Length: 233
Image (cartoon, rainbow, N blue to C red; front, side, top):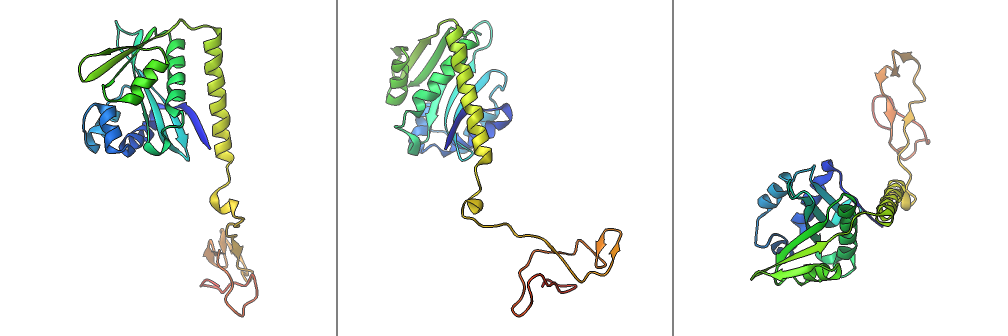
């Protein structure tokens, strides 16, 4: 099961892990050149948490796709730059399109009027996304700059974002209630047992030793529930 939601500023470590998992070719296309792990980590650490919005496709607690929306500083505060990445095993499933749609909806509802995308000319996936959302592309020689115009927010765009947030909340709740692998297999957790031969309680001590609880199984020949003082039964 997956969840699509915006990352909290304290969750940008999930974005870092996602970018580090990109294969060498996808990483080169994302950063328009080959960069090492330290450079990727430094990039995420330097992101302005107040101007950055990351819409993430999350499966089993890991970000597998991300749309990074970075709002420009004033006086260009009505524009933002967008980058979309999807890990190789999750590509060709429409994830990039859905992440970009949600990121553009958020940008529109925050009063932005233009989103820019810059990619290598060979990056067919990003060019396809830009074209799909009516971006105007300019080939600058080796790179392509795409500009996606945004309409002013309206009731429908606000409602669409509310629906997206509601779906994310429901997905998160279902993830929290998802049984663990052990529970799914019907494995019961170990139950604590107290030494039945304890003769007195002394300031919270059981049988003269604090916390004389047993979580072991009986030895061969012993009756269930029997504990041996001073050692595991």
